[in-house]
Amino acid sequence: MKYSVFSLLKHTLSGHKNWEPAWRDPAPKKDYDVVIVGGGGHGLATAYYLAKVHGVKNVAVLEKGWLGSGNIGRNTTIIRSNYMLAGNNPFYEFSMKLWEGLEQDFNFNAMVSQRGVLNLCHTDAQRDAFARRGNAMRIDGVDAELLDRAAVREMYPFFDYDNARFPIKGGLLQRRGGTVRHDAVAWGYARGADSHGVDIIQNCEVTGIRIENGKVKGVDTSRGPIACGKLGLAAAGNSSEVAAMAGMRLPIESHVLQAFVSEGLKPYIEGVVTFGAGHFYVSQSDKGGLVFGGDIDGYNSYARRGNLPMVEHVVEAGVAMIPSIARVRVLRSWGGIMDMSMDGSPIIDKTHIDGLYLNAGWCYGGFKATPASGWCFAHTIAKDEPHKLNAAYRLDRFRTGHMLDEKGQGATPNLH
Amino acid sequence: MLIPCPHCGTRPVEEFTFLGDASVKRPTSNDPASMDQWFDYVYLRDNPKGRFDEYAHHAGGCRAWLVVSRNTATHEVYGCVTARDYAKAGGKS
Image (cartoon, rainbow over all chains, first blue to last red; front, side):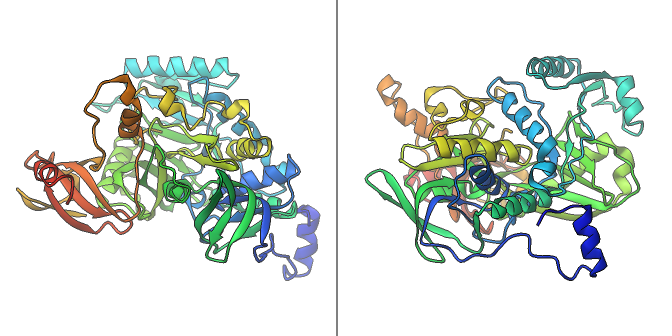
């Protein structure tokens, strides 16, 4: 059923008692053309574009928990395409363009809100680096504006501009950046994929990968064996565990990243703002809570919860940037497991095993990439070769020295 | 997390800086033929869910390099030895 003002009106008149479930709950079949491991944003988007763009109808998405229980429901909902490297930014800009048409495309209100993403700078050197990145963005056709201190102050008069250590010198603004209702992205893609015939199978954990003569044959799961012609891994923080079932070691470590939301406030912070002198980023949800986060805790973890020192660190950075939030109470905090790659960039590629494809290494930038990641991974699986947008996201780039290291700091698993 | 430092006793996690997997072995040769070993050492990780030995620098205490044994799924800490003792024991905690 198509969602529209008319369907809403019709169901209002019948007391909202007759809405149908947005997707089926099928039992797994014995055999699929393509199986995707991981029912998060990237896995569901991959299935959606496989069915819709490439006409692959016999597809299953296997999710060990419930749909969207991982990082798609644990992020700070920010979308942006303000990268610098040639192998990176066209991909993220393509993602931004997909975001801009996404709700019409999959007929679901994902609350895409292009409210602007502003990166603050605090030194002359940082401003020069922002000018360079902004120019690189504009070469790729992406909007970027370098703001001076007065222009930032006009947008956000309540920041601490004269902080003795970190005075605000200006900022790099991408007006087309913004936020998206993250759960709705999972639900929209799930509903869209399901309507194109994809089986979304929840509570189905993959326990083994069957490979014969260098070719993928299927998977063993908690709900029995499932045969498949092609297998796509989109397991985010659990990528190393799943890849190990195929005998692969990845250039990835799993780390915990915490995020926070405050009590509800009246409209206060219009867009997304990032602190340039520490790791802190904040936006305000439509319910009024400040949604904010910082850096990873700094040790390997699969625990989906962090420790208090990072809570203190993030809050200190936030108060240094916006002193007036010192009295705001934190309502909730949570953690997600990040697949931290060794150069801060992701992997969307074939593997050395025939029919096995890998989508991993998103660090803590995976949410904004969801549409393009699904689109490119679907292309890579359907055509058995990468699209030019994900051509740089090769698995073997670490061996050949073709790293995509935005910060020029690798090899270390704490970049993004 | 509380870390039982062999020099300082049980100390809170914020005093420590973690460097990651202590089980990786630095190749001894600079021969180009050993580049596969270097690739392994620099980039590839087992990244286990469960017991994990990791380097930790007690920056807020004795400043010694240590190896902490910890469960990455539960954050339970099993023990902590100096990096020297860990190496002497052949890379076993």
